[in-house]
Structures are given as C-alpha cells and as structure tokens.
Length: 214
Length: 207
Image (cartoon, rainbow over all chains, first blue to last red; front, side, top):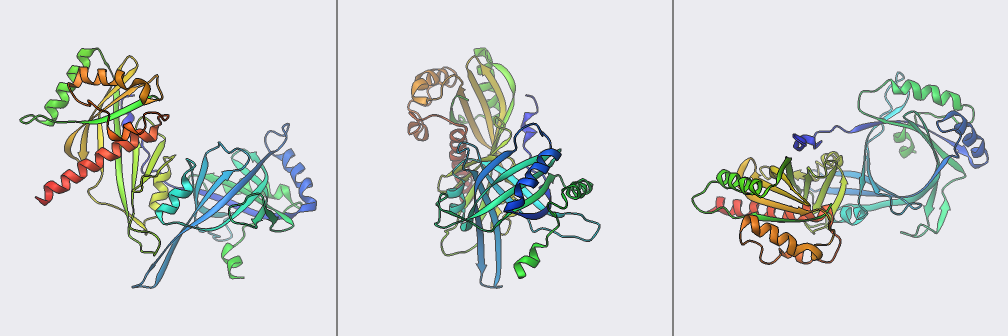
C-alpha cells in the first residue's frame, strides 16, 4: 500500500480512435456477418449483439463580445439489454482525414464509465440534449480491432425507446481501434483487414466534413 | 466497503498541527492499530465561465480517493454526485472553454492509514494550496453497510481514542442512517468539510 497515494492518473493523455467506415444493405448483411464470424476471434461462438440508446448532449455558449459560438458534444450511451451495466460518457473529437499515407480517420476518443445519474448531471452542468437514437447490432473482435455492424433507428417520440423507425435500409459497418497516441502502425493492420472484407463491404475513411456540407 | 464517518479534530490552542497529528497517531498505535500505508483524498473545483440563459453559474468539484484509485467523483453544487472512471479528468480538460479550474483552491487530506480489527482509521492533514489548515479523521467499519446498525459501536471507538467528540452523528450521516452506504457518501462528507475549510480560509484572509 505504501506509495498508493500517487496512483491517480490526473495527467493521463486522451486516446486516439482509428476508424474506417462503410455500409451494407440489409439483404447482404447476413453474408457479411458470416464472413466476419470466420475472420474474427472466437469464431466458434455465436456473434455478440448489442442494443443501445445514445443521447448526444451539447454545451453551447454565445459570448456577445466576439460573437463566437463555442460548443462541445458529449455522448451518453447505455445498454437497453443490460440495464444494470454502467452508463458510458464519451467524447469524440473531430475526425482528421490526413493525407494519403494515412489509411484511416483519426480522432480523439475518451470513454468513461459512469453511474446512471449522468443525464441529470450533464443537464445541471448546462448541457442540453441535441439528438438521440437507438442503435442495434453485432460486434466482433480481431486482436485489438473492433468491428461493429449496426442499424440506427430514429426515435419517433422523445425518450421513448420502443417507438422506432429505421433510419435507412442499410447497416453501418465500422472498424475501429482505440489506442494511445502515436501508434500509427495499427492503421496498416486495419487496412489489410478491410481488404479481406472486400467486396462484401468497402471500408473507407469517410470525410465527415464533406457530408455535413452536402 | 463498510460505513464511514469523517469529522474534523479541533486543534487545542498552543499546539501545532504536526504535534496533534503525532499525538493522535501514537494514541491509535497504543490502541493496537497497525499501520497500513498512506491515503489521500483530493478535490479541485471548476467554475463555469459561460453565459446561457438556462444555466446559472455552476461549480463542479472533482474529487479522488486513494481508497478507490480508479474512480473519479464529480459533484455539481446542486449536490448531484457522478461516479465515473478516473479518465473523467480528461473530459474536464475538454471543457476548458466552459469550466475553468479555480486557482489556489486545490485541497486535500492526506496522512497515515491504520487497520484495527474491523475498523480502518485515517488521520489526515488538510492542505489548502499546500498550506496546513486542520485535521480530518476518518473511521470506517467494514462489516456493515447501514450506519444505523453500527453507529453506537463506531461512536464508542471514536470516543475511546479521541475523547468526547461526536455525541450526535453529523447531519449528513443522520439522513443516511437507514440507506445503504456507498463510496460517494464518503466523498460527499469530505467535500462538506473541505468547503468548510475553504470558507474559513477566505474569511481569515478578508480579516
């Protein structure tokens, strides 16, 4: 126990998330799931599913003197399948596309497990709910790579996770690795893995800024 | 964990804080308690510096307890306590434009930790921006989760070491007597005392 006082990690640096994205239409989803099951760890088990509710909160300020609008988004996620599991509070930075030598998107990523009062906590801090959705899907692991195949549902009434409508006729496919800053080599592994999933799904680095401009 | 009572120890006039801490440590050792490392509870306070119509000015206190080394406690001044992973500190850094750390407000209680059978006794020196402000004692009784069931036992131990203190339980604990005790309750007791020390310090400065 001696020296335990210095355990606190006040100065811990944020992690980076390396990310590739793609999508697959509903009809082809099963083929992709089978392929992933074969490629990923624990092939002998049935693939694991998740069913989450995600709420995105924004903290905004409008300082009159410089007319400069600042905002920060925090994402709250909790499982609808396992109500006793901890809630998650996440911060995801702006995704950087980088140049051609970079195979994936890179963004700052902080994921913190919290108690279940996080929504009231954020509201009291001044955050306001921006939008929310329900996400259902499957996840796979291959080493430290994570693959999720998920469907996003629009909530027809606020705060009602039963009354849903699918956002599209396809599944979102994401290949991610969360690692400490500076582990650029992981991008090569991700690129190679993405190659193995072609032509079932094209995983690419998608420029989010271009989508928001459209 | 069990149930915990945190309370200040008044330093008698003419004695220094160090002397009193030494004296308390000797008393606890005489009782037969065994040294079991050190402990630290720290608190930093952030103040909101943004204006929007719906939120009044807010304080957020970020606390850590070496007893729960992977946890960070965040308490809004409304009293709502969020229990989170220690990486919550990084999230606070992301809010730099909205919440700023109050300078010279870092306060901590640290010192020796003793085990005595089913009890854990901690003798903490309170440091506000590295200057000594007082003594906080913490007594934990492991085998029980409800304070109402073991208050008299704890009181007996506390009074046998520290004399006639705590005739009645602190107000915060009174309302917790019949609910299950958790780590965030300990943190809230510390925060209450820390705020007291900070108020006293700023009142002294103003004088």
